[in-house]
Image (cartoon, rainbow, N blue to C red; front, side, top):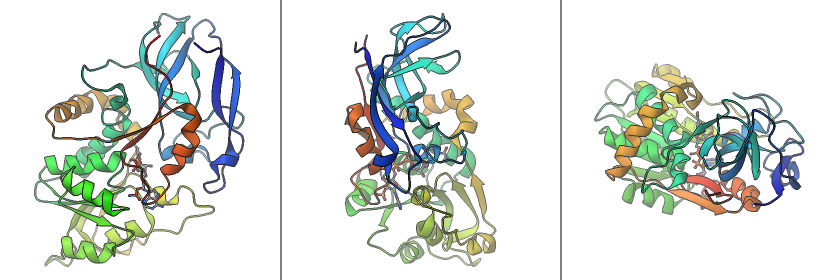
Length: 346
Ligand SMILES: NC(=O)c1ccc[n+]([C@@H]2O[C@H](COP(=O)([O-])OP(=O)(O)OC[C@H]3O[C@@H](n4cnc5c(N)ncnc54)[C@H](OP(=O)(O)O)[C@@H]3O)[C@@H](O)[C@H]2O)c1
């Protein structure tokens, strides 16, 4: 194995999407584990929109990534050396690591990954990882779908959104996805089984939703649940079409993560008029219940009821250009974005 640790160092807080100025490629000696630590080599690195929030000066749900060190990210890794009984060389682990070849893991920092025969290891970062769990608990525990209800999800062709929509179909809902290209919309309907898809870059989302989820006698629209991943104008267009007592899972606001200054606020007038419930939701609060979700999701994947896309980029050196793709409306990215860094063997 290499004696070098390649890493993307956060040297300044990015302005907008100027990631090239904020992150610099550096090569340092491979770190040496002290007593109580293990040396973990990164096998695959999850790239998530939330990483952009972690780069900011203000804390999100974790402290800001310190300047001068590696950018943080979720990893699957293999233990190369260990000076603690907690980790055994050759073992696969997952947890918070860096945009780097190596991490020194202390007590309790990483949890073990038990591969499932026939399931790629990367699935533990996509459908069976935080992404799948986000969709699972956000929809099933927060929104609590009932058969026959209308569910709308934005960033629907992405990692979280594509699973949310399929879970909605399993629960018997009428599912409408909002995505950024005709190709993505076709995939939502023909591959993922959504009932309808709206291309927000070509179509009037407000008007299309009024057609697909028409107003009801009680004065509301027809959207019973909205899984919000985007915010901004897309969110506002959905709020206009909310049913009375609608439930909104506020999962993400990707359209605002690169905004310099304060983002333009949502128009919540209809949320008020329709007496909707908006629930700020972080998967962090559900990690202790991961086993039940993983078991059920793995079952649905095995039965072919849930399909999942992975967008796997080969090589740590391509991390920065890959990360930018998350923030490209209508870009080529679909499904879970993962960087393959090394092989999962010693
Ligand atoms: N609350 C939680 O615990 C939690 C956990 C995981 C993720 N999330 C949130 O879930 C959302 C989706 O995350 P993901 O990992 O599944 O990413 P993703 O959907 O796989 O990728 C992001 C997608 O967002 C869309 N997008 C990017 N910039 C946009 C903009 N300015 N306007 C409209 N759409 C834009 C793009 O799709 P189009 O081509 O369709 O525009 C892009 O492909 C994010 O908001 C993320 O922060 C929350």
